[in-house]
Image (cartoon, rainbow, N blue to C red; front, side, top):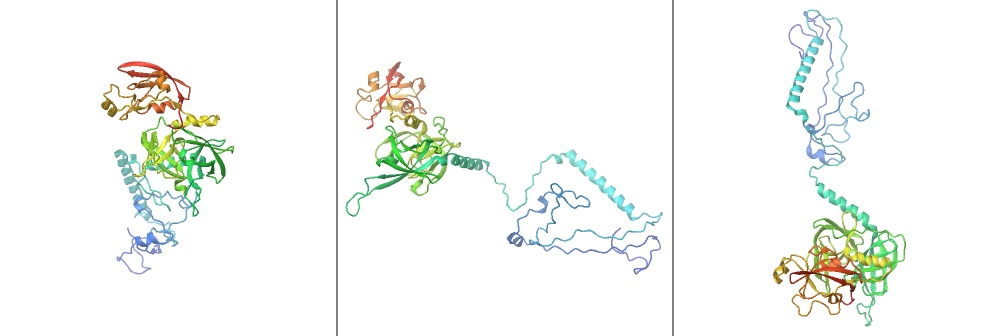
Length: 487
């Protein structure tokens, strides 16, 4: 049965069919206006239009509720959407509903009516659909998870990188936690360039620092504040406040200094530990590079530990952390923090003839003088009075040693004794050629060199050394002295 008129039998709108005793129903025809053929370029470039997914990938619409239209959420009725290729603001075509005139209930008993045919067709469709569902269920097709791509104004991408997202979040969190406690330090020195009339002009340098105690105690580099006029510097916080600071003390061991600001309740950065750092872990450097870009944040990884470098004035700095986080002039004295925002080092130098090689002093080396300053004590370092080489496979082979780790008391290629006269080591009986294996039960190795372990102690502390001499182990007690400032 179809909707087209047949050509058999009498013609004309009033000619009856002799075999049909039902009334004829005139069904008004509805011809929808065809959608314009979509143009991909027009659809994507039109102002206000949004990219849409192909129809086969969109989620199936929800079942209509009789009398109320489709609903979304808690009974809300969304407006009709235009065709995907139609311009924004176009009126959608009406639903494909055909109005009919009610038919007379008088039907012939000898011939099947329209309702019988429709009912039979409907039952056939239900049975066919049920069979299809049963087959799909038996084959496990319904067990597969199907993901749908949400449509909206933001384009989605499937090329996600969870590691990058996590790393970015860690950098943001670390900078937010440590950033408020980072300061910019401006130092003015009396000696500078000569002016037009031969007078010395003041020289200004800018570095960074980090507040580690809320009462105004700041850790920075020695070379940032060295030579400051009247030991006074300017300290600027991230929130814009500025204070006068004074140089409390200079470290005699490495490139560190303490600055004091007479201001309470300052933001403080958490202090971590550098002993357990792992090569490759995330680190973040914060400071004021070039003195212009205050409170800048760079990130990278921990590239190495136990590095030794010689700086421009010939001073040698040992046991440094190496990172590829960008460190530039002006970053000096700023903190190197881990993913939790805890300070694990103080940025101090960068290799001038390379890119991506920066160095920081481990926070464990700085901790003793930080505590001394807060306690109101003079900054001092312990001193044992020997020269030594940390044993590795190269040193072991060069000197024919019998152990893989330890501190070999030696001058290396230079002449003279490795034990300083009248030093604590000389008084305890240490000799050239001895190998110090441990100090107070802590084994000396590449991760824990002797000088890094010594900084944990204070002058006048007595420590116990296990020493290997000519194949025999000895235990010596050494009372540590105070490191001279000219070493």
